[in-house]
Length: 127
Image 1: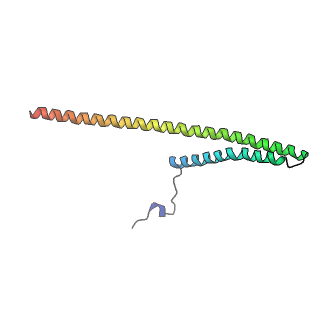
Image 2 (image 1 turned 90 degrees about the vertical axis):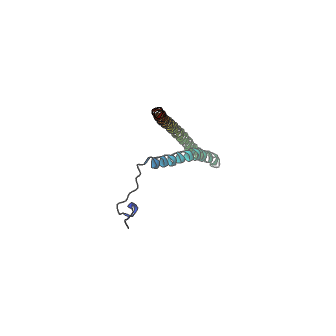
Image 3 (image 1 turned 120 degrees about the vertical axis):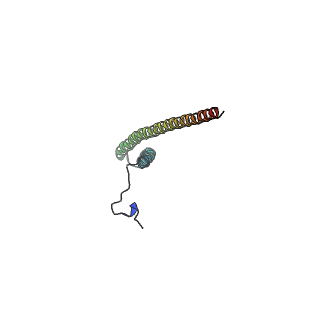
């Protein structure tokens, strides 16, 4: 019995496949989405906790909260871009699929017309 490719010593998974890239993009979008929510939440918690400190210790905490809030907004912009890119890819894929189906339907229609013409030509010769 022959060995399967997976059982060979030099077997490697093909990560250049589009599906692998799609999975990687989905994971990246997930990380961006979570970060876009967590960073502003951390900023809010630090800002509220700063009021438990004395006045001299509040300013650096307010600065940290501002930095976290700004980082969250930047991540949110990247997340919005990633979502827009996903929708753009989906639209292009749907457009290509629709064109392919139209092409197949046209080809099938032409084949049927050709067969019908052959049948009618055959019937005309028999008569």
